[in-house]
Amino acid sequence: MTDVWFVVAGWGVIMGGLALYAGLLLRRLGAAREASLRIRRDAEALPPPAPPAT
Amino acid sequence: MTGLRAGTAVALAIARKDAMSELRGRQAAGSTLFFAALVLLLFGFALGPDSRRLAEAAPGLLWLAIVFGGLLTVARLHQLEADDGALEQLARYPVDRRAIYGGKVLAAAGAMIVLGGLLLPLVAILYGLDLAAGWPALTATLLLGAIGFGAVGTFYAGVTVRMRAREVMLPLLMLPVIAPLLLAAVNATAAALGGDPFGELPAWLQLLAGFDAVMLVAGAATYGQLLEE
Amino acid sequence: MKTRILGAAALAAVVVAGANALFVVPADVNQGDAQRIMYVHVPAAWLAYLSFGVTALAGVGYLWRRDLRLDAVAVSGAEIGVMFTAFAIWGGMMWGRPVWGVFWQWEDPRLTTTALLLALYVGYLLFRRLTDDPHRRAARAAVVGLVAAVDIPIVHFSVEWWRGLHQGPTIGSPDRVLNPAAPGQFVIALVSMVAAFTLAWAWLMIRRYQLARIEWQIEEHGRLGRISAARHAARTAAARAASGEGAT
Image (cartoon, rainbow over the protein chains, first blue to last red):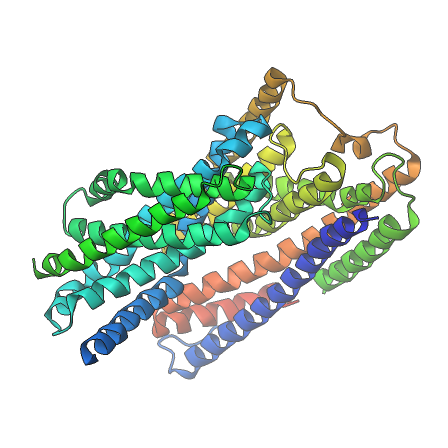
């Protein structure tokens, strides 16, 4: 039943890869959101040349 | 003896610097690998689909892909410094020119070994080869081939780095010189994969080693002059 | 919030359909357990081509509307597409070895076309890295993606013709599992896997799209400088509050 190893390899890489990519994606998304928030906070800390809308 | 030690230190430092810039500028190195892989894929379209013919052609195709990738690599290793004017600075250091040459050859050979190492499994898959058979000999061939290519490539990259039309001059000058290396490497690879039925493997490897030795000596002797220009 | 539900649903679907395909469905009479690989290979291949289509269409859309959000869709499709293409090739190889005896067969038009698809995708992504200006990058990428998309069917037909000319032996076809005459259980397993994977794909696309938009905003802030960023940030905050756009 050496075929089983190919099934394991096939499924393992694909499922594992999907999980890995999803995890990395969520991490990148979190980091990007934080960075974006930081930029916005820094920007709002400056005396605005025009008054903020809200 | 201090001369040799200092020289080795310099060579290693230069090799390490080149390796760092290769790793940092991952994209260029990655693109080269991708290009070489693409060449292998396209060879399949050009020569296939008969798998037996492809398997017979595989050693030649592998080394052609390595050579093409190597041309890009060796040009790139010189281009970074040339652009920044660092080559002139390098030339001004009171350092044995041969050490500089040695370091750059080391870097080039290292890059080629990585390239070849990554292409081997790809070739095995695409052309249906069994690598397990002669892997020690394959490794030796790759090493000797990489060193030889690095020696010749570093020299000619140094020659052409400031020329116009250097993209075509480098291969134009290099490829004829590389022909014996290609011949030996391809035949050694084929012998290694086929179980060496005629016992010719040692002869090919010796040819490779001899080529490497000659080119290293010639390159080391003349590289210094290239820097002075 | 909706995306989170989608994600949970996708995960559940993949687990259930996957468990079914791996353990419940019986093995194929001829191909044995190796045939199970088809249950991941086919969805991966389908999503690879779907992503590619999305990338190409989004590119065309960008050229038409010059809206960078379409470019964000395009890059999402490309990145996720590269992944599924690699999976499809891997699955094909893992299936091919036990069934064909080789990891690779040049005469199979699907395998070779998918290999070229991978090459096109990778080239597309590498190409994008070379341009910094978002609009120029989007336009160039759109053109590259479009030409690549046009190429794919040509490649497929030429490889099929190639195979026909050489009369290569086709031992064992991946088509078996797609055959509508196949036993119902197989068909259900395959369809459920395709559906589950497509749900997962949709979730990944949404998340990747969100990432692309934020990254573009960060790029934008970096380029315009702090004062302009402040003005932009204020406007965005107001627009966000006005449209009630949640950050899920």
